[in-house]
Picture 1 (cartoon, rainbow, N blue to C red):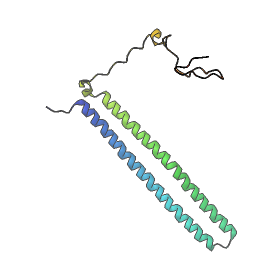
Picture 2 (tube, rainbow, N blue to C red):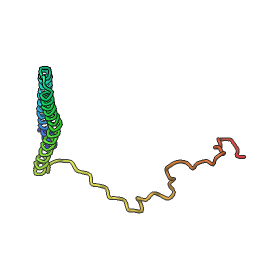
Picture 3 (cartoon, rainbow, N blue to C red):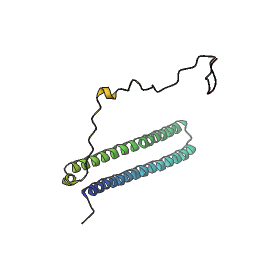
Picture 4 (cartoon, helix red, strand yellow):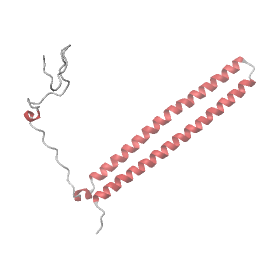
Length: 161
């Protein structure tokens, strides 16, 4: 007789979905980091080219134009650096949500769930309102009342005068 139960099959299926999601996360982040590294290399190359062109430039207007082109390229790369991780996170969230939704649909219609030998404990009924109220004899939780100024606490064996 096999020890493999429908409950084990359910756990295995959830583990498989989790494993696929992790593979997708790793692949997506690898692509994001690779594109970031590529943009970083482009940024360094553009800065180097701009610096070399600036040393050969004799015209102030051409130098200003060169600087404007470099700034425009740097801002475009910075924008891409900011939007790529956000787009990646959104795509991964959608992938994860659709995977879990598909698993839930699959589990909803799974006949092996009917064969499981486990029960869900029912929610206990809420106590009536009079039982839920604190007892009148209970001491309130909190700070002790303040001592009047000039009076100390009396210790064991000391008589009050």
